[in-house]
Length: 206
Image 1 (cartoon, rainbow, N blue to C red):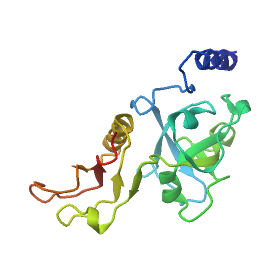
Image 2: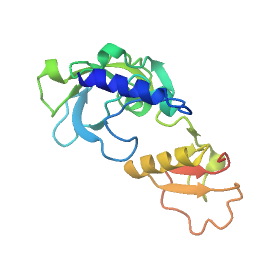
Image 3: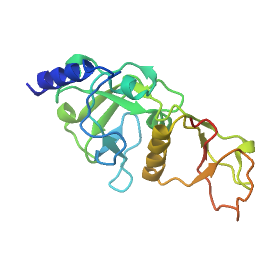
Image 4: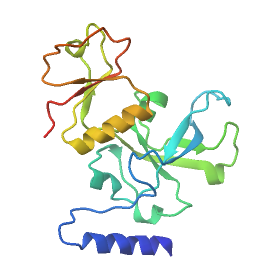
């Protein structure tokens, strides 16, 4: 019943003049309210209570990624019949793939939600159907992006203030050290930074 009502709501919103796209989510994107759960990844060494990974879970409808402009790196989005509590499909970020299955195809891999040692496969198992790029507007850093000799891991290049805000929330959530760069002159950096995880470039902002 809830699924039917949700679909009807989205259809009505899409019919409003000026609305380009509409989707459903159980929380607002990047507002920090998502619930966190422990999980284990298929094919990985056993974990303990001290090193078990944790993920933030978002329940969304099939058009969520297209509506927010988040590209899928591989696989598919959700199907309409997967909008239930019993569905096992899951979409993960590219960072999850790089962490657990570098150089491998993650489609069909399984994540088991729950604490380390959980054996409740029926309710906890989730199968990966696609991977997505957490932020399309980023690139690996080069030596030219270094800040007084400190090379960042990534350069963020947001195209508008909304994406800029999302990137800053993500960086804060991941506890990244971010240095902002304007026209690229690099004047007045001040003292050399202890570490630089990311450089945020404003050159493409519009």
